Image (cartoon, rainbow, N blue to C red; front, side, top):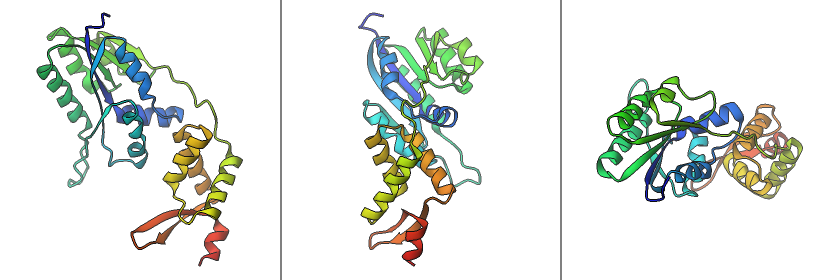
Length: 242
């Protein structure tokens, strides 16, 4: 398409993150979403939506969006009710309609989701508002309604993590960290190891969690003047500190 076309990108980040993590054991690649959206013209709006209070993994993954200049919208659930109500869909729908009303020059809406709840807005923008609506999703995880409602549906190419997690290397890395640093936390370890070894963070998180489940490492609470910190220990070091 001509470069003068204007594009808005909206990402259902909960759908993307949890489907990739649970089905493929990998993290999202926001740069691929930017690349796809930019094929349709000048990218004017780029927003992602998730309830970041629902998952520590999801909250940590949000930094991936900032590296691609994607605005993260935290659609926190209402947890005052007996059953928490998720507002991610509402926030995303509100942003889509708001962009349509406030930025008339946007011709193409790229919506990353597989959720059929978005089929109505997709159909309305395409049929009544004469917009080009591109749905981007994961193979086998896009509702039939979205295929029928969108101008175009694009399936993301899913590639398994290039470098698998070496269990023995991870054990050695964590053990050495525990011996040389006073407060070795789960999240910090995952972040550093994945960066140093160039391994997918979701894969590292799962591998370390498995080692904890197996008793190779344990988590204990350490008291500091600032706050209580949950740290990693080897069972032998934990007993020695008692």
